[in-house]
Image 1 (cartoon, protein in one colour):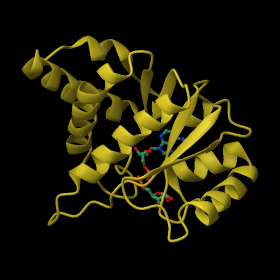
Image 2 (cartoon, helix red, strand yellow):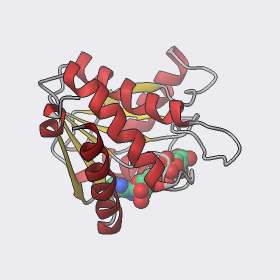
Image 3 (cartoon, protein in one colour):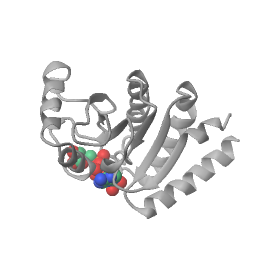
Image 4 (cartoon, protein in one colour):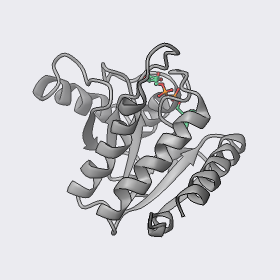
Length: 183
Ligand code: AR6
C-alpha cells in the first residue's frame, strides 16, 4: 500500500475551536442542538448563529435528526474555520460492532470538505469522549479511513486535533503500527 497519504495527515494537541483551517469537524449528537465536550466548545466559540444554522439543517434535511455516521455542513460564524462539518459518532457498545459508523463519520467528512473546496480540515477524536469508544480502536479506524481515502483528495491536508498529549501519544503508537504493517 502507498504511504503517500501520510504526508497529508498531521496531528497535534490543542483546542479545535482555535484552528485556522477551512473546516473543523464537530462530534455532535442526533439533535444538532449542541451538547457537552467538543460540541459545546464549538457552539460557544462559533456563537448563537451556529445553533440557528443547525436548526435550519434539521428543518430542511434531517427532521428526525442526523443519523450515526452522517454529516451536515454549516458556516463557522465566529470561528476561525470557514465551515463546521457536524457528524454523529456511534455510542460505543461492547456487544455491537459499530466501527463502520465511526469510519463513515471520517469518510463522509472528507468527501463533504472536498466538495466545498476545502484544502484543510481538522477532526477531533470522534466518539472517544462522552460516547465511550475505546481510543485505540478508534485510532485504528481513523488510520484505515485516511489510508483508503486521502489518495482521492490530494489537495486536502488533515489535522487530527487531540485534547491531551496522552491521546496524541496513543495515536502516534497506533499510526506507527499501522504504517509499519502497510508499508
Ligand atoms: N478541542 C479538541 N478536542 C476536544 C475539545 C476541544 N475543544 N473538547 C473536547 N475534546 P466528546 P463524543 C475531545 O465527548 O465522544 C457531546 O455532548 C475530547 O477530549 O466531545 O463523540 C455531543 O453533543 C474527546 O477526545 O464527543 C454528543 O452528545 C473528543 O474531543 C456527545 O458529546 C470527543 O469527545 C458526543 O460524544
